[in-house]
Image (cartoon, rainbow, N blue to C red):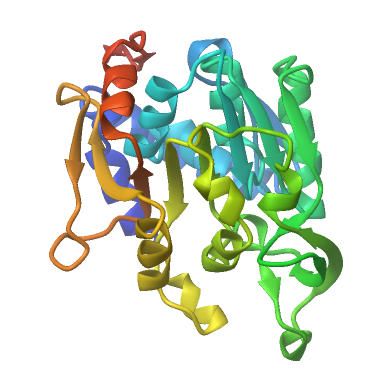
Length: 298
């Protein structure tokens, strides 16, 4: 795992002019975590935003040495969203995407996170960035129908919904709703779904949301975890294809190009960007303001 992290860090597009510094940050942070297991510190993030970094905020740690760890997806979000948009963050965790959307792109955000562990950090990240007026926090799980479910704890960024037969895992009960219920009177322009394999269930409870023409793009986790729920990644692609969403890879440093993916031939990344109304999205990306990260304007 450490070797993989190091390889990703030195190959990250935003670290090409600062490889030694990024590696230094990686090892210094690792040392800090070992010596200060419960401590957290405020990291000055991009465009004057801030993130709490500590042992229980794995996703913030990744930003500390990679700046925008999910480079393609996070850059897409920053180029696509503006102050007129609403971003829905399903599985917000400690709020990295939420802070980028509200704090950098100035969009309205609905951040959804059921985990007790990460909710406190999410709320604190919103507070230290003075974004309470831009972000609505929903303390619920999202699925295909409303009800109550078991949610794991003590797993940091990979906490997830579990079945009752898996109740030997440390967990607690949370309220579950659907995006169709939650967004009944609202429009979402971009949605991110990262729910550790439960993505298909979220989509099944989002039929009206997916048909809303205001929704132009979805960033969704496609890392093979759906088999935990006896589902598969093909279901994600099929459900979204049925409502006109096509998978793309975003190349922010190469003229902000969108490359259409062939799910039978192309390697699908940890996350996939699905787009509807391609020409609208292309035009919006093209006229977006430059982002400056690690001395790189793009």
